[in-house]
Image (cartoon, rainbow, N blue to C red; front, top):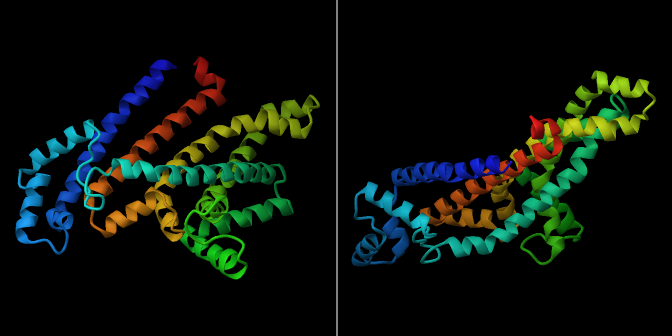
Length: 306
């Protein structure tokens, strides 16, 4: 197990290196003068040239690339025109808000999505199954930003139940969580229902029922455990995507997280800040995948002994 974890952790710097390389050269191909953006629109030509020398933009591209890599190794993410320096401390200040929103969305998905899929499979063909299937289709068809607008209009503007933007307390977390988690709840419910139906048709289920095991016990103690691996896969992958998907939701609700900071950085053409946030999202996605793989070992004994 330890060797497995170390091998997965060793991959993270390699993948991060590839991402940094791709993002660096993509932004080098984007039109625009980084020195002008860093110096400001009102800067004189002399100030721009001074900023160009300070950022190393007057040196060959490969030398700039090597400087960027060495800086990242020291925790220096470069010069951000937004913060006039290394953007890493400012990103870390925003990170807890994004993690809180992502964790709330995942917890809501687990509480609502998995039970909905289990109930739909156990009551296949019933009115409850049809209602859940209809709700799943609806949630999958609704973009999260559109759902967020509807929530603001109804719960905040019309009924005045919840604050519509910013973080003013835990009530502020409700609507962003609903907008971010809606599609994931539908995906997990559909996946759980499909896998549960597949497991319910297998021989070990018929054997358990023939031995007199109660239907609820069959579902909770046998079928659900075997159905969890595909569901955990979906949860893990979608958790990584939530980090990127939170960009739109955070902007919509003025949530003070990294996603909102990313939008601001793109608008200001602060490429250094965009690269730093992109790298953070990639590393977060890789760590989440590692957690998912460890959950496989916890859920499936065959992986631990095989």
